Length: 174
Image 1 (cartoon, helix red, strand yellow):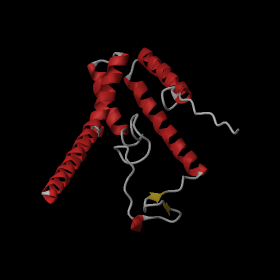
Image 2 (cartoon, one colour):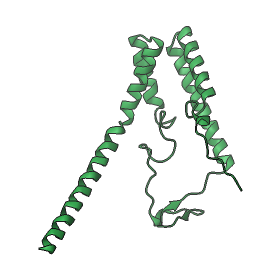
Image 3 (cartoon, helix red, strand yellow):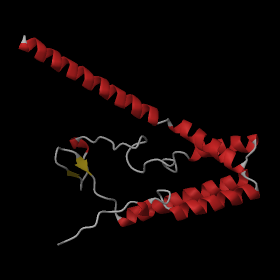
Image 4 (cartoon, helix red, strand yellow):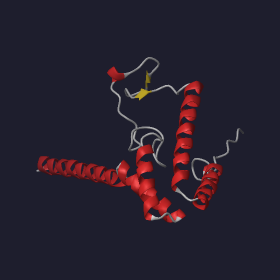
């Protein structure tokens, strides 16, 4: 009798775990729209915010689709794959300078300052090219409003001005 009850408990536990994992996967899939859908949403927001007409909206969508892969995730995570999760790397895929964490997970070294500067310059050139194309699409007043909003976003920082809100616990060395 005890063996039957124990077997039932084990079966219920395993099925509950499987269901929970499936629900988590569905939740992640729902939360991560595909890249084209994100571009369309971003375009629709811009059209609404700056009052673009249908012709401008079509040109803007084409521009945003053109630059979607060049400029990286749009407001999304900056590391990992398109869905923000870190890519899985096999031990055989390691490169020189990579190390392994406990448990066999790979830890890549940070890029050098020169690599980061190079990447920043590339991104800056892409943004300038995007803005030049955008200026051709928008009217002068629309583009001025866009530039003012972009300036505000730059002043707020990468997290929307939330950097200083979280207080770190003080360390008292008594």
